[in-house]
Image 1: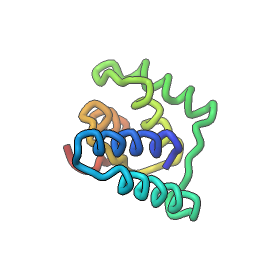
Image 2: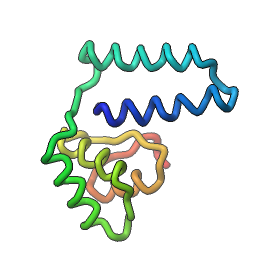
Image 3: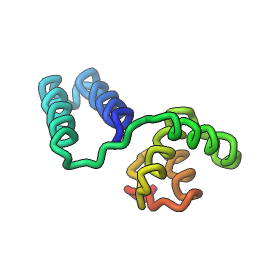
Image 4: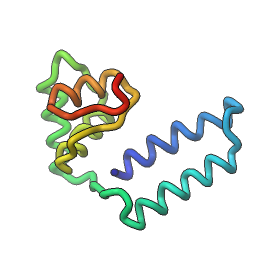
Length: 109
C-alpha cells in the first residue's frame, strides 16, 4: 500500500461525514487504524519513487484503449512495481487497465 492509496482512502472517507453517512470521529478512527496497520507492517508499503513515475508514464502512453488519469496510472504503477498479483478498485477505468496488464481486480467490477 502506498501513501497515495492511503490519501485516496481518506479522501473517500472525508466525503461520508459531509453526506451524513459516517460520523467525523469514526472517519478519524478509521484513518488512525489504517495508518497504524501500515506502520506496523500489516501492509506492504510501496514508495512513490522515480521509477514508479516512469512506469506510470509508460502506462499512460501504452494503454490508449483505457484512458487513465495520472493518479490512476500511479496506482497501477505502484501495484506492478510491487509485483502485486491483484489490485483493489471500484473505478472501472483503473480496473480495466489493471486487467490489461495482467492483474486480478477486486471487487470484480
